[in-house]
Length: 226
Image (cartoon, rainbow, N blue to C red):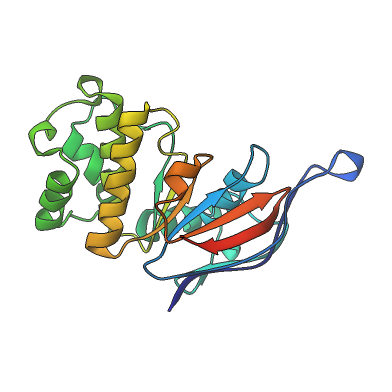
């Protein structure tokens, strides 16, 4: 059963002679429960694709549907609400609130939506991501790897249909990068979480079920692991 479907997706920045085509006719289907990696050189269109999938930006042409919702038709308020409820986002930089504890940072998307976190799932997140003993710590008291774990837990707390991870290990050393990848793989395996990982690291991409390669805004390779 497909969760994500893109049709003839195109994004052009600028106009006339200054126009730059960041994505040029992307067709992509992601089944529910798949772990997909998107790779490519800088400027290949990876981050642009992720921003369109998240509804942060709108396509110049084409369509993005996630869980039956045409993301491109949403206004900014609707898009923000859709992201909060259906899409978890993890970036290279952790974007944690420095004055909130680990536990409150994780629960923030639900609290902003005037919902109460599921206590059992919150405990499971803390335990799975190795944060139980840090639940009352502030972000400034954590290592970079621990802060990224909090960011992943926050993205998963609302049980999103899709987790989008944009270079989530780009700010970490090799050891912490490997740990974060292991945790994403664990979330995929334990909870059937659908994940789209944008990375320039072939070692990280090799852990996904499927890898697509972008070049000059086009998909040039789409292959299963192995």
